[in-house]
Image (tube, rainbow, N blue to C red; front, side, top):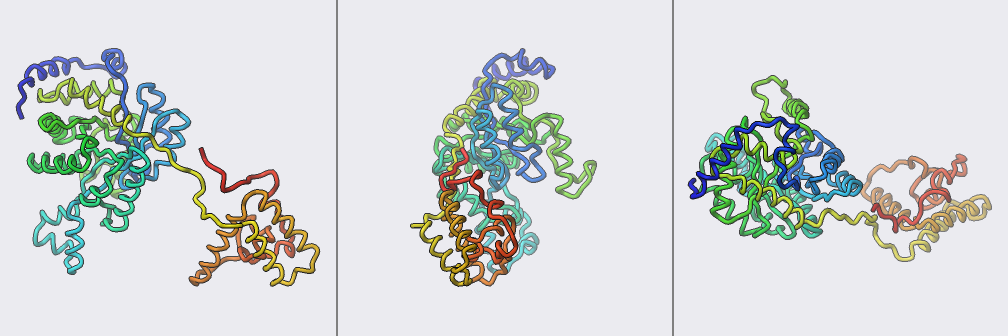
Length: 461
């Protein structure tokens, strides 16, 4: 890897590297650009890997005043997105929906082998390297730019769990190309397909992956640079190679910190969590964990300090390159509209729901022989009026449909639980099998004039 301006830039990096700083002096010493968006973040929904709750990350980001956006990118799932969304609204921070996907190009070939009755053990015996390709997954980072991207992200995850799962939910090149619209792709961490090839010394293999990904995503593909610390084998070499290849191919880089915890001290918690996951002790030499405490919510100034001290050694990656990678986080944040879910209830539309519920209830009253009872008729009318006034008719009919379908499938259905046992309407139409009048149960404990209403119009904005 050579570069005409490398010597000068390398000298600048080496001079600045010798200027070691205490953490408290970082912001003062480097008063350059402050804005930064964390685009690779793992919450507790990256099970026994991410340390912090989504709300903790958002609150921490908001407190800096310089980080205006955060992407939630848990491993193989999006469970942290709802909590992060509501926290981001509260703190006026842009939340970007994302995911660190498990990627495996050999998924379909593996399924073909399994269909022939060939086991992974047999493959390992015949060709250990091929077995690793089948089983070992790489990581790529995907971010939703808009509603289309979010839907495609959900679809990719569905495919990964339903079709691609082998211990982990996996996607592959063809399905990625099919569902690319509305998404930004980052090349991934040190375990990404590109970085993995560079660690093996296979630069041509890395470039082949980069070319394929760029052909799919165009200008929405970025080479992901990370600085997990000098203790991580090959991290500095891969960092330099990625930056060099990006420059040669004219592809933008973006800096992420593969965040797993909010503060440096939380590293020990993550190590303990990984030990629990692997059923080992924290001092076990066989414990697999990231031997670095650098993967926390750093500010841009803190990232700059890490760069000067550890990652500018080769003279290939300059401070200009570093700042451009930081600026790309703001560029990607601008590309993404932020997560704007439709949180209204997704219930089927039922024509004339009020009339249909009244008809079913009256039919039930007659079937049970209560049509001549003033007590039952009066209670039925009172309940129906409140249910209709509250806008709950469709909800009752949908619940009834679920109950009836479950019975048709042969599932056991209980007599009813909770305060709905106080509803005569529920009893008459068949949602419950408890007569609330006979047992002296109160309808107002279930629905009362002072609580709720207009269910189909409620949103969670």
